[in-house]
Amino acid sequence: MLYETRDAFTAEPQHAVTVFGMAGVGKTWLAALLRKAGWFHYSVDYRIGTRHMGEFIVDNFKAEAMKVPFLRDLLRSDSMRIGSNITFSNLEPLSTYLGTPGDPARGGLPLGEYQRRQEQHRHAEVQALLELPRFIERAESLYGYANFIADTGGSLIEVIDHLNANDPVVRTLTENTLLLYIRGSSDDARKLVRRFREHPKPMYYQPEFLVEKWAEYKAQQGITDDAAVDPAGFGAWGFEALLEDRLPRYQALADRFGYTIEAAELAEITDTAGFVALVGKAIDRRMR
Image 1: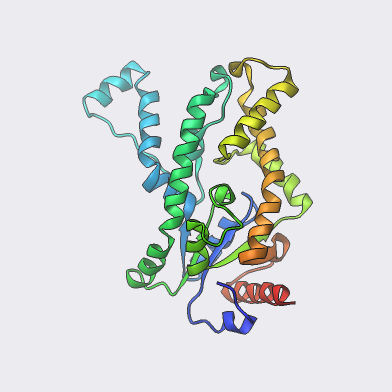
Image 2: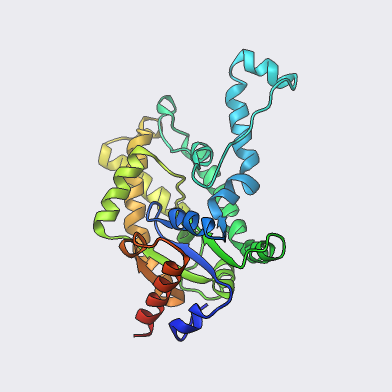
C-alpha cells in the first residue's frame, strides 16, 4: 500500500503495517508496544516456530532425549511429554533447531543437515508470509482487532525477489499492508553484532550465499575439514556477512514498495498516535 499523502494514511479507520529490517532493530519491541494498545500482533517467526516447524523442533528435542536411557524409556512408554515453549520474545527453540554448521563436539551441525533445516525454514517462512491476509481478516472477524502489525524476521529479504512486484510474497504484503523498513545506523549495526554474539537468533542464508561464505570462512581460517569449523565463530562471522549483504536489499525493497523510518525515530515512540504520526512523516519524506 502506497499513499499519496500522509493524511490518506492517518485518516484510515484501520491500519495494517508490515515492519521489516535486520534482527534487533526494534520490530518486535514496536509490535509489543502496539499490541498493548490494541493492535493484533502477527509474529512471522512465532508462526514459523509453532505452525510450520513446531513438529521438527519437538522431534529434535525428543531425539536428544532418546540418547538418555532414563528419558528414552519414559518416552517409549508415553510417560512423559516434551514440548516447545516458543513465544514472541523467546525464539530459542527455533534457534536451537536451526543451529549452526561446524564441529559437532562444539554443538555444530554437519553442513548437509544444516542446509536441510535451512530449506525447511525457507518453506516455512514463505508459507507464514502468504498467510498474512487470512490473519488480517481473522484478527478483525474473530477477535475484533481493527489494527494489524506484521513483525517479520530478518530473513524476509532472503525468501523474496525484492524488486519484483509479482513475487507472490511481495504481492501479498503490498496488497494487504503498508511496508515499513526500520533502518539502523552504523552504530546500531555494531550493537547488533555484539548482541548476536551473546544471544544468537535464527539465521537463514540463501543456499548459494551459504556455500560461498562457508568456503570463504574456511579459507580465511586455514581449515579444510568442515567438522573442524568453530560453530560460534562461523555464526558470528556469517551474521556480519549477512548484515552487509542484506542492508542494501532492505533499502531497495522500501524504495520500491514502501517507506523508511530510522531506528532512532522509532525509539521515541510511546503510543499508537506517535507511531501513526511517524509513518505519516515517512510518507511525506517519500513524496518529497
